[in-house]
Amino acid sequence: MAVNARVARPTIADFERSTRFPMRNNLLSMISAFEAAGIGFIAETDSDGAGVRFRHVELEYSKSLKVRGDDLVVAAKYRGVRIDIVVPAELLDDIDRTPVGTIETRRHSAQEHLHQLLVAAERHLQRTGAGGAEIVLTVGDFPDGTF
Image (cartoon, rainbow, N blue to C red; front, side, top):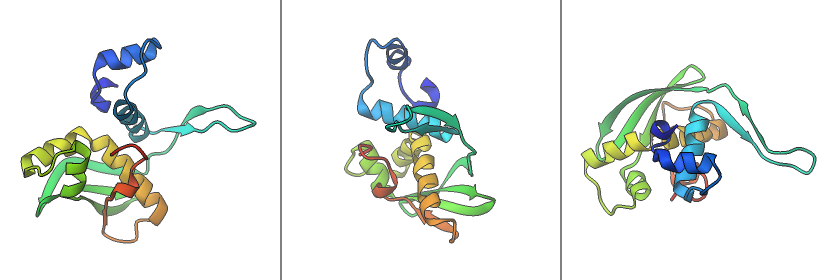
């Protein structure tokens, strides 16, 4: 979990023991890692409690990132249809809270936050479908509090 979520092991251990609640960015990172692995979270309702379930992951992806101008591209398939997930440079700079990154720092950032990018891409595709050959991620594709 620590490796996939890019969160320190003591943070996860403390959370499991209920000795310390993780910071919001760490919690979002852990949730994204679970969602990227096919775990769905069920919200609590008046009649039912909160829970989790396995879900079919519809997004297959390549871990290799391609450079297109200042942006990065992840090759993927959604429901068997090939698409390119374009990650704008500005988005990666916002995730890392840096003013202007280099291609190398953005590539490193994308690898560090790949699970969050994939969850955002899958949410985008669930909303809009895979009608085109590419999608461009925006801040609106991410859960509140990511940035």
